[in-house]
Length: 342
Ligand SMILES: [Zn+2]
Ligand SMILES: [Zn+2]
Image 1 (tube, rainbow, N blue to C red):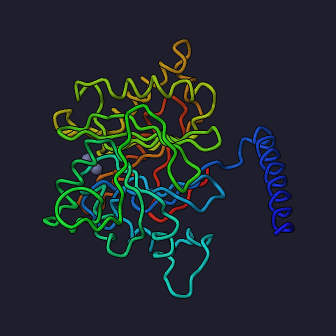
Image 2 (cartoon, rainbow, N blue to C red; image 1 turned 120 degrees about the vertical axis):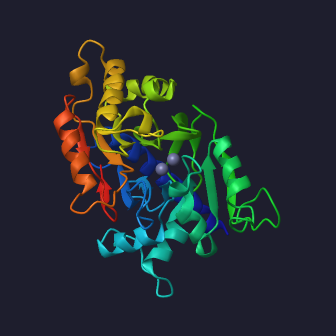
Image 3 (tube, rainbow, N blue to C red; image 1 turned 120 degrees about the horizontal axis):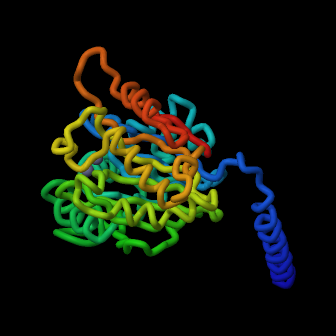
């Protein structure tokens, strides 16, 4: 026992030294050392049920991820495996890599709102999933509890609501503007409300090692939604942009331009996205707004494919964003199955 006790003490000393080195080392980390690791499970916003909003996110070098929305899980994991984006996970002789990742390495779901294209993969995958938390704003938890996991639409895999509670999932209510660590991960999340037609929605600001990434669920422009939620969000994150600590923004661009404002249905097009980024730029540096966001990574998400022969909407939207980009941001359109380190 004495030896065990001694070993524990020695171990504790070593852990303190390593932690101290880690803390000391972070300041010296080169700017291009990745902080975040994203695996794109679903990048679309409609029509194709095998590619709907879902992004796995972890601190780089960590295998504990959260799913930012969960529209498509299994089909996205299969695509990720085919693309080599799951090669860093340990293999299991009994389970396919998709199941290993979903059950063991996705520690929680962060759900922006209850629309089907953000929750369908979670519902369908629930019988084969591992236990985990569902984190969302209280209104979204109510929607999942009353209208999804209610035994009418789908069995109740959660810990509240109608009928027998299977308790695989635990509802965790987030409060707007309040940071909260995500259990089992090295991430902290702060949620913000967004306006999205008749439904509400949320943005999640995620932090690891003092660096941040911002994920926006579905949102319309403030001017069209007659609301101020994006303006509030930009005020909150402007200091992080100024300090160089916001490394990326995932932002929806559902429709290509031109799009009548009355037909945005709580979404953005490239011209509206640029207007909102300009609002952020004004908050970051009112003197020189066109310099304020230079080099910021903006990932365009939730593009709605159309059934029109010969038209690739992703390319059309990427071209429009490039033409409109007078702020020097770095646009990218994530592809399903892709792994992004930044
Ligand atoms: Zn929606
Ligand atoms: Zn959506």
